[in-house]
Length: 112
Image (cartoon, rainbow, N blue to C red):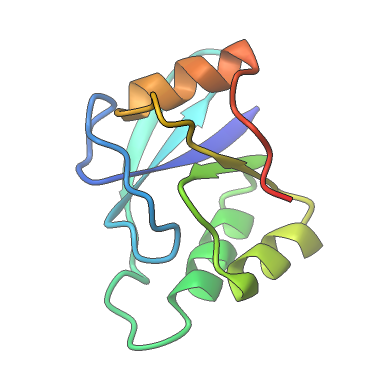
């Protein structure tokens, strides 16, 4: 499975970023191999519509889930329409690596 995690810097040990549409970086992770790559969020500087642009990026990356702190209404609608799961960080998730491990353990809740 391929997922995206919102982070502040392009590293797996980076602090997570709570803003889906305005996160500076996404970690694209293959959960089977745990291989990851950092991808800059081109929507971070949009004056409007950053959430929808970030959702389109997720769709284009063919991920099955996105892990972040929060999802705006337009982004969540676009992700839902594309059948991409939205997962929220739990309070104990501090880094991208934490998010990945908690996701693999099934310890994160899905955003409704």
